[in-house]
Amino acid sequence: MQSKATNVADYLKDLPPERREALQAIRAVILKNLDPDIEEGMQYGHIGYYVPHRVFPAGYHCDPKQPLPYAALASQKNHMALYLMCVYTGLPDGNGEPAALDWFRQAWLKAGKKLDMGASCVRFKRLDEVPLEVVAQLFRRIGAKKYIAAYEAVLATQRKKGAVGKPAADKAGGKKAAAATVPAKKTAVKKAPAGKPAAKAPAASKPAPRKPAASTAPHKTGRK
Image (cartoon, rainbow, N blue to C red; front, side, top):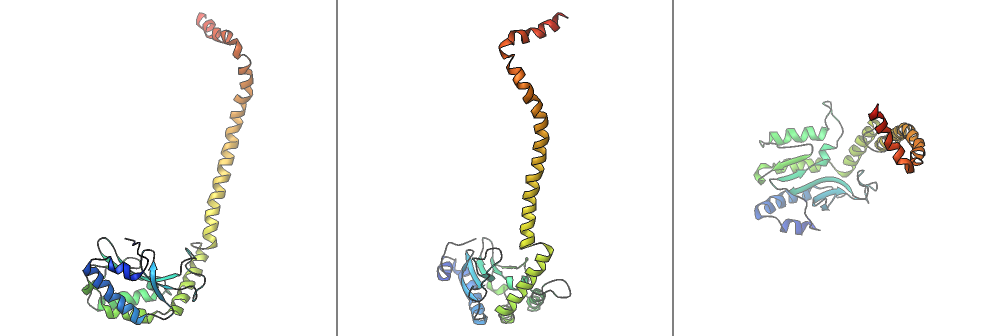
């Protein structure tokens, strides 16, 4: 759930006591181990950790006005969540997965905790489900420079595949172009037959006053 709070203090204040305590504990670990070039603030309705524009002027490729997201803490409807973009966007290892993500999963499980994780979201319901030392190691492991390098490497790879950037814009443009071209051809085809009736229309409109004559045609056919 996205909060309308404009600062972290208000976000935490609005939470139920148990959730507030859990997120405050994780937040304390994050802040203690956070790279100075990564800042904390509200982003996308959650407690966000991001690389500010002063460090990475390009910003987030999906929305350059936003600083580059790094991680986030959130209270959702049925769980709390730790979002780790810093592990999802990483340099690939031999298994085709981000190296940091592979390390993080193994470290979490070695700590004896069950890992409920999506693409970059770790879900939990209680603080004791989170190995805080693993969280501390992760934030020490990936600083701003390393994260930016990994992020740019992934973007470069995706652009080559046409997943983001100019190729993606070309795809959208291609669809629009196709949409503009195909209907144009169809319209042209439709206009041809439509043109014939259009030519007959005047003829039909001229005898319009002679409707009685036109109406007698069926009667003549009936007589036959």
